[in-house]
Amino acid sequence: MSLNHAVIWIDHKEAHVMFLSQDASEAEIIKTKSTHSHLHHKANEVGSGRVSLDVKYLHSVMQAVKESKEILILGPGSAKLELIKHAHQHDQQIAANIVGVETVDHPSDKEILAYARKFFYKADQML
Image 1 (cartoon, rainbow, N blue to C red):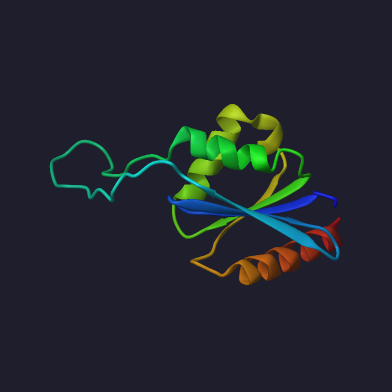
Image 2 (image 1 turned 90 degrees about the vertical axis):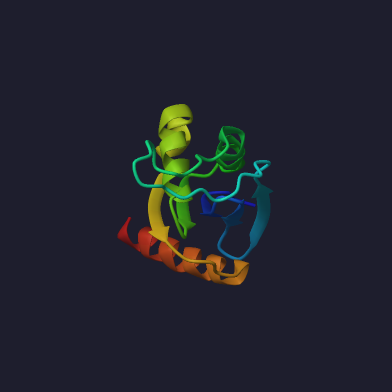
């Protein structure tokens, strides 16, 4: 199967990584080993009140899509931005293949796949 298109839906607990070809797809779920709880910012405290994502988790997600030519990243919060930052710092060749970043809440795998197919169809039409 051609791995030209990949979509990653990521939050702080897990990443759904899907590879698309014209007529098929395959998926993988990568979970973080981190068991941090939510932190909240308190007045007169230094820092954002957030725990950054596990570097091994981010690296695992990036390695899963290392052979993809075009990567779309989706997610509900800041995890997608942390993934992009990680890619630019540690996996620059993979970062160069990121073609889109979108905020998407908590879709099902079928909804992620449909969203990605629509996105890549439009992207391919522009090329």
